Image 1 (cartoon, rainbow, N blue to C red):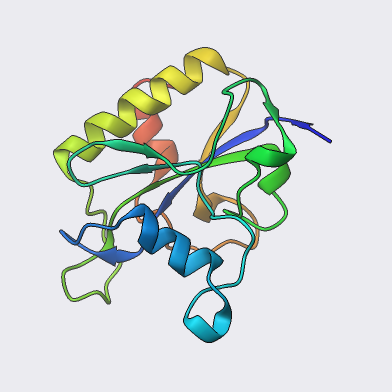
Image 2 (cartoon, rainbow, N blue to C red):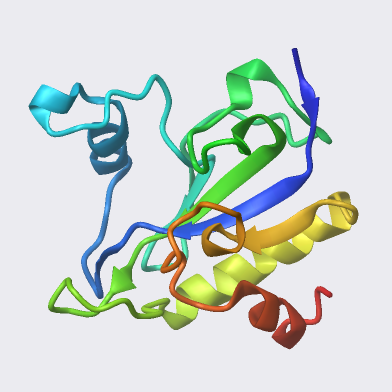
Length: 156
């Protein structure tokens, strides 16, 4: 049963600065069996991924309406997936891979701003949040303050 869209959740891949991630990487991390290094999920955690060069890649089909259909559900944040869309930018860790850091390239910042502004125009009542803003979520993802950033790009 489809549910009303309530959140757009922004994530990071938690990978080292400057290291690209592919959709195959995401599918491995999320969908492969645990014994093969994955999480064993039926679906990846994100609808779209923003690459280092600013390219946006669709990972899960989405009809872009105000509903989350069962086939659109991703596994981005437990307890919120049936009412959310999830996007992810590649990065989120310093080059050493240990320290949390906002590693968005200029191209990623521009692509994310365009994505979020277009989304907000279509769905002005949907809350745009960082993964870390949801109760029980990792407090380091997406490694920047989404609320502050939304003010900077004049979305809220």
